[in-house]
Amino acid sequence: MAVSEKTMRPSGILRWLGGGRRGLEGYLYVIHRISGLALLMFLMMHVFFTGVRLLGEEAWSGLMEMANNPVLHFLEYLVYVAFAFHAVNGLRLIIIELAFGIGPPDEPVYPYKGSIHKQRPLMLIAMVIVGILIFAGGFDLVAMGH
Image (cartoon, rainbow, N blue to C red; front, side):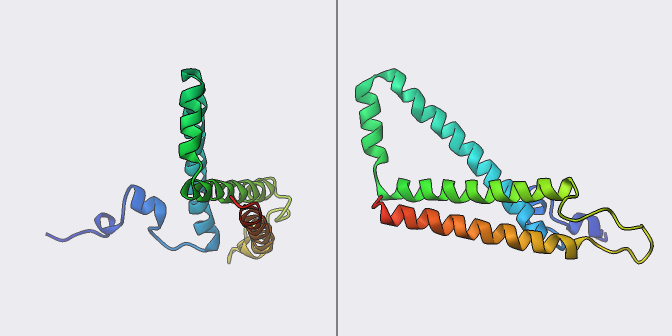
């Protein structure tokens, strides 16, 4: 029995994460999804932690003492990194979707011209901004002594 090419392709989460050819923008798309899920998980955790205040001052103080450790401070920094990337990359995607960053569409004449040369500079600018924000957040984390 021959195995078709269709059954050889990854499916589900494996295909979502990397199956197939991707350019740099494709990987940014995957990271954008992952950072969005991470921010959603943080939001749910934040609501839970805030809800502990309903159990009284003693429960809240105990939770805050437990949360005051270097591992959780590093995880807070990772939340900041995810937010910085997700926000700036989201603005880049909005600019592209509204065609501000890539101009009007080209005439669909074969061979088709991709918009990669128009999108790549915008992507590079956005990633430099993300890098600056991540560095500034890390500097603040170290300088403030968290």
